[in-house]
View 1 (tube, rainbow, N blue to C red):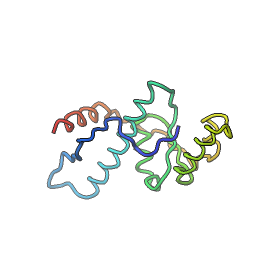
View 2 (view 1 turned 180 degrees about the horizontal axis):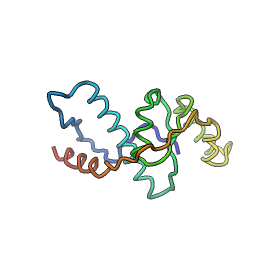
View 3 (view 1 turned 45 degrees about the horizontal axis):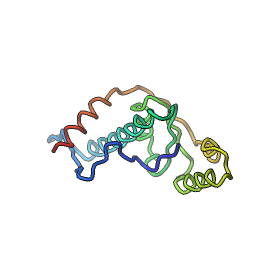
View 4 (view 1 turned 30 degrees about the vertical axis):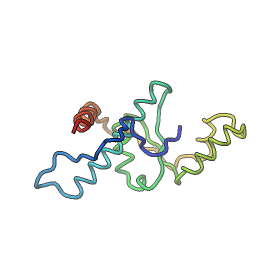
Amino acid sequence: MPLPGPTPAWWSPTARAVISGLSGDTDRAHVAHAAVDAICQRVCDVLDAMRGFIAIDEVRIDGGLTASEILPQTLANLAGMPVELGAMDTTALGAAALAAVGAGVLATVEEIAELVPPLRELAPQSVRDSRDAWREFVARASSL
């Protein structure tokens, strides 16, 4: 099922950005790494919410952030499942394919994935169990 970006399961109209744990040794690379980790955590929040309705065995992603293997591999590790990288940005194609399903041109949503085969797949290398720490961080940051 295509996801249009990391729509947060924790959405709140009063939410503000929070960066914590900074020290004198923190540099731009640390902040960039934390941003990638936060994006992946948010995607996992959405996956967790979706698991109540459908089975999810893999995730397919595309777009600019997939040019580096850091984000896809972090997502595979956090989600504990393979991440397929698309060969191109398929946002518009996904919208058109969903319309095709609605119009009866394609029979099922599953046929959409066959239209654009993945470029490659990354398997989890080490499943990181930081989901509870993330949820606690979000809950505490929400009360600021």
